[in-house]
Image (tube, rainbow, N blue to C red; front, side):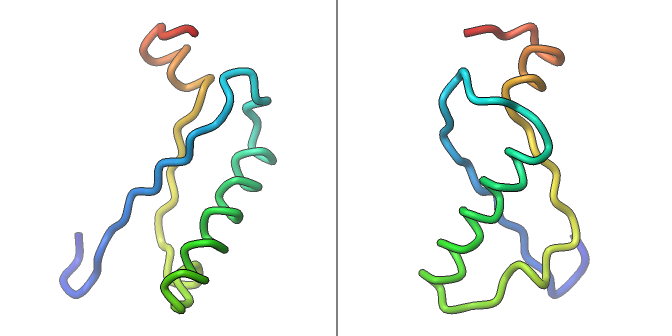
Length: 67
């Protein structure tokens, strides 16, 4: 991590049968960021430089984990 920067990991519990596509991931990302920015009274989203996500299909494909 570059000097003067911080990182944060946000875990969002979702239903196992939820559709796992980019649109759904973005929806939940924005919901989580809205809540975080409201709680902290900070504009965090504009400072995000790296935003990986991992959900159902990733666990199935990468780890052979099924419900």
